[in-house]
Length: 70
Image (tube, rainbow, N blue to C red):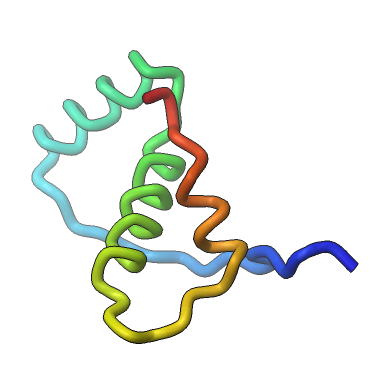
């Protein structure tokens, strides 16, 4: 059986300054990435960095090793 992966999605709503959002979207597009891809990567990195002593699933660690356009 393959390693467990993220199977479901959940919505996260953010309120941003419209100018910051436009700049973020422009930079993402220039790197051929969607804003969602970038935010998911940032969240993975944050969780791993701040997990403390919590055990992390292998699928999360494997996904963090995939660099998005870097």
